[in-house]
Length: 88
Image (cartoon, rainbow, N blue to C red; front, side, top):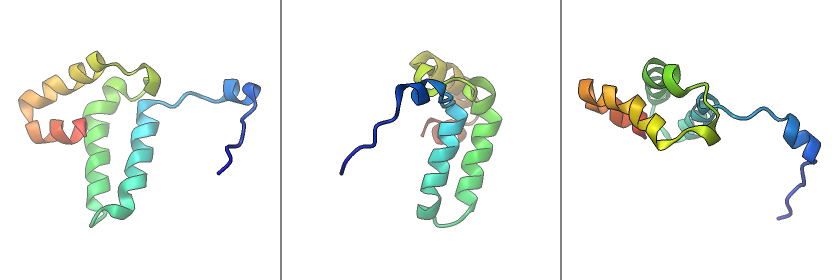
């Protein structure tokens, strides 16, 4: 399969993807494999409540391990199951 080249000028104009954008795209890509629609709603609401406020606006390429740890640590102490879903 042949790759299509994207002009450099177009790459420069492209808006970098945020963590929120990437996470929502991932949820959408997994939707058909889940047994019911509740899974997508649960994942989305968990991320909106706990993760997006902290790192949702950060560009995916700039999210570092320290950001993830700082986001998950308070959740882990309160509700480990929620932290586990967020970590996934």
